[in-house]
Length: 133
Image 1 (cartoon, one colour):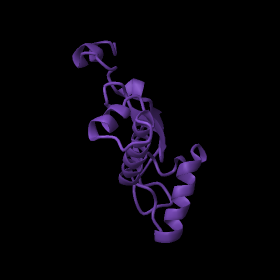
Image 2 (spheres, helix red, strand yellow; image 1 turned 135 degrees about the vertical axis):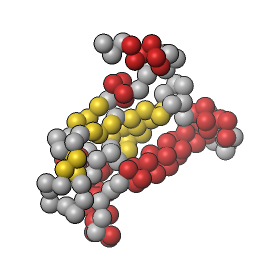
Image 3 (tube, one colour; image 1 turned 90 degrees about the vertical axis):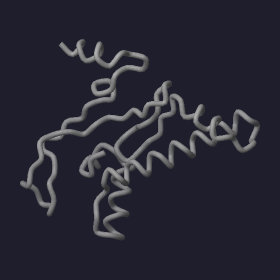
Image 4 (tube, rainbow, N blue to C red; image 1 turned 135 degrees about the horizontal axis):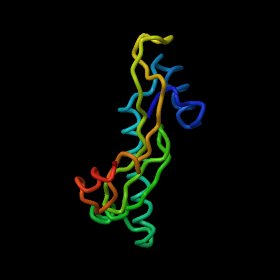
């Protein structure tokens, strides 16, 4: 998640506005992580409960329901793969003080997809690294 990505993601725009109006602060990675975990948990509970006809699911049933889940987060869609590894895009770039803020920002901003930065489910890590060529 990157706080300036608001032109591309309305959820982040709305969150940043509310956070700025109330606290004069911008969204951080901690905000994005908390939002994702709560959203994914809610969706997994609802999914598992629906499969049980409305009953409250066990922890194992909720964990199973997290597989292949995708939820809109502050920095775009985020989820869990079939092997229950979290998957998200990454915002990277060189840091700079050349900005209108009293903290470091990233410029130019580059977005790397989960497919670019995470080994595929079931793949051997070192063999995957060797494919980078």
